[in-house]
Length: 209
Length: 209
Image (tube, each protein chain N blue to C red):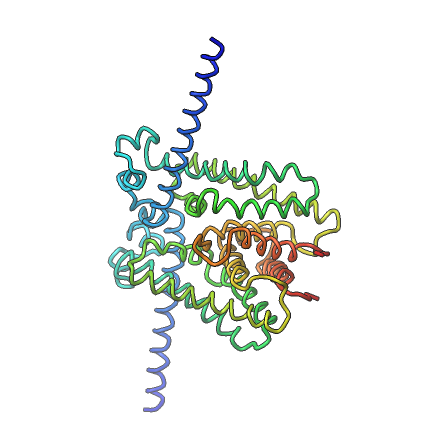
C-alpha cells in the first residue's frame, strides 16, 4: 500500500515534470517564431507547426496567442528569479553578488534560448493587466541591481558613478546580449560571461584588482 | 537677375529644409505610435492622426506602412552616421574617439527621441531587401566600434578583454538607453552621457586615469 502510494506520487511527479518540460519546449519554439515573424503576423497555426502539434493539441496547453505571450514572459521572469536572483540573494558581499548576477544572467541564454529573452521587450502586445504584471517583475529585478550597487557605493567600493544610471546600463548590457549572442559564434558562453563580467566590474569598482 | 536667381535658390533651399523637417516630425511621431501600439496594430490612420494630417496628406509623404518603417530606420541610421560616426572619424586617438562615440550616441536620444531608436530593432517587419539594407548599416557601425577597440588593444591601452564581445556589449549599452531614458527623469542627458561614458571607459581602459 505504501509502495503503491509512493509509486503514484512518483508517477504524478513525473507527469508534472514532463508537462512542465513540454510547456517550456512550446514557449521556446513559440518565442522563436514570434521574434522572427513578429507577434501579429504569427498565427496559432504557425506555433502549432513549430512544436509539432495540431492546433487543437496546442490549445490543450494554452488558451490563445495573448495568453501565450504572457506565459512566455512569465517563464522568462521565472528563470531570472530562480537562476539569477535566488542564488545572488545567498551572497552577502555586493562585489561577488554583482559578479554572480551577470554570470548567471549570461547563462540564461544557453539555458532558455535567446528568443524568450528578446520577447520580454514586446510588452505593448500584452493586455493592460498582464503588462502591469511584467513591468512590475522587471522593476523588482532593477531594484535588486540598484540595491547591490548602493551597497557597493555605501561601502566605498564604487567609482563616482550614479547608482541608478549605472544599474540601468548594466541591465541593458545583460538583456541586450540576447540580441547578439550566437550559439555558433567563436566564443563559448563561459568566455562571453567572463569578458562581460570583467568589463562591467572594472567599470564599476573603485579598486577592481 | 543675379538677385532674383539667389532668391529662388534660397527659396528652394528653404522648401527642401521645411520638407525635411516635416518628414522628421512625421518619422518621430509615427515611431512613437508604432512602438506603443505595435507595428501591425498601427494603421496609417493612427499615424495621420498623430501628425495632424489627413490620410491623403500622409500619403503625400510616404507610400505605405512598410515604406514608412524603413524610412524611419533609415532616418535613425542617418543620424548615427552624421552625428556619431562622422565627428568620431575626425578623432585619431582611439580613447578620445570611444568617449565621443558614447557621448554623441547618448545625445541622439534628445536630438531625435527614443522611439526612433527603439524601432530599429523591428527588422522582422521589413521586406527582405530593406532588412538586408538596415542590417548592413548596423554592421558598419559595429565594425567602426570594433576598429576603435582594436586600435586601443594594439596600442596596449585596453584591458585583457575580447574586442568583439566588448564592442557588442558597448553597443547594447548605448542602444539600450532608448528603452530606459526618460526626459522627465532626475538626471539630464549630459549627466547620463557622463556617467555612461565614465563606466564604459573605465571598464575598457587598462589605465583609466
